[in-house]
Image (cartoon, rainbow, N blue to C red; front, top):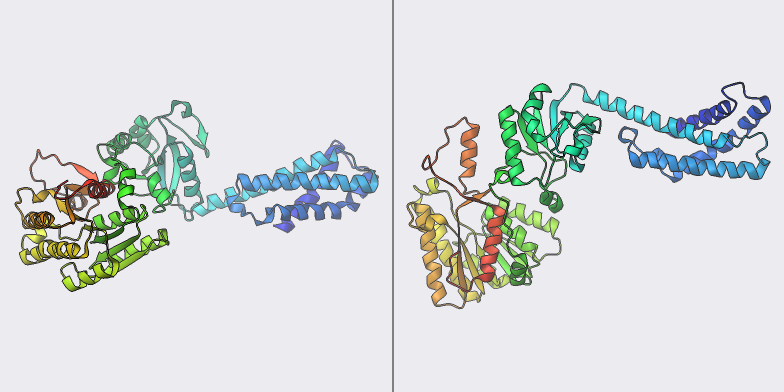
Length: 491
């Protein structure tokens, strides 16, 4: 890089004289002087270039910061050269117009070579053309997405055009791609441009807009992907360029509900919190949300060693200052449970450990009763002995007039803790859920598998209406119920 830039300095310096004399022969005195001071010119330029870290820039990824560094380096170097020559020779045989000409020529040569190199390697790196991609959203996220797709090696996706509902953007070019219309034009554009994949580059897209775009994609019979949500990027669980399928919670028929975080925080901050089933879908998300409220300590109880390791490792990485205690154990093991309580003295217990799959438990009555009923009774009894403040049971809507083994065992667990509440200082609270998107016990994974296998999709009744909440909403509800509940309530 230094050798290349040095050669460019020499060429630009001589050419500046040539341009000064109208592309005619350079008079010998001026040419001799130009050659005499050339080593000084090269030395100053290279010193300034190193000072601005120009040689460290990767040519394949040349961007605005690299160009800015080149411009600054050349201008400062030219100024130093002009001052040095003036002090040494009073500009004898050195026309003043040489300096601006030299600067412009050198900047143009250095930048052009880098951009040509970048364009060449971008083209070569593609090899076989990737999938033809239509990008939804001509904003900052769309611009970044196109850059990432083009810089990847090998290139799996070939951006073709943008769609954006902003009428002011129609017809404009971003990264060389044209904004061809609004999202409503998707079926027509996808057919005309032979699009293989639609990428949604709007991280904060509203639910109704997401549903509308998905409908357009289904109409066009084209695959689609989306960027992570803004919250996922901020939480560090995803990167801005990570593409993923459109999830069901993206298509939720309403905007997610946010509860009173200030109230929840006041009730859990500084408390010692214990979560059973901490490695499960509900339990792990509950741990993620509780730890953000700065509890005095968080105790994880889980019988699956890998799930326990995974959630404990995640929390330790994101919240290294939290007092975290991971305990591998079974809630039915009363001596083990009592040991955990005696060691960590929890103030609040969230009991999420349970068997939840209705079909599986129909033929597993003993296991269902042991885990869902006896396990809950052990946790409740030890909580009373340890003097806990609150105990929250995570239950199900199937406990209402139960018609299954799972529902019946969860109803029995509710009755047990209600009986404990009447003769204990511990506030026992029950929270019931229906369908939770992302939960291991939800019907959603079953539907997804049936659709992937080509059907049929089994439902309770052709006219059934199902209402869903996200895992995040479910866990916020659990925490708010814990804070608001005084004992014996069922939420």
